[in-house]
Image (cartoon, rainbow, N blue to C red; front, side):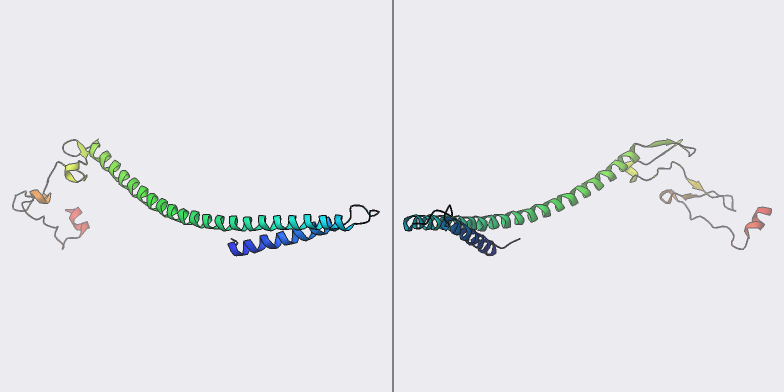
Length: 177
């Protein structure tokens, strides 16, 4: 962007350059056969000076207008930067809201989901009261060598820790018996 002081200097130079040919044109006789008289030449000079003064005044007005416009542009550029910052903040907020909404939709879908299943109880669900986790309506019991069958799962109903298979037995030996 051109600075206001440089723009004013350019407008003044343009006006001066334009004034010279106008002044020369005004000073030249209109026809080669007509001899210039002193009164006619003085009138042409006066008109050229008047025109030059008018152009200088116009150039000064244009310089002032250019300064005013440069100030207005600076104000608008500052406001544009502010608006762009606000827009970026609103876009980030929108993205967060969309993410929250997507999570809410998933939670709602899970809470309303009820799938027929071979699980005891006949269905699988993900209710809100269980934190949208699968809800299994069964327990796991382990048959023990002493004939007991304690509940080992879920932990909330667990009576005894489960016992791992005999580590000395290989998988192939266990299948053969």
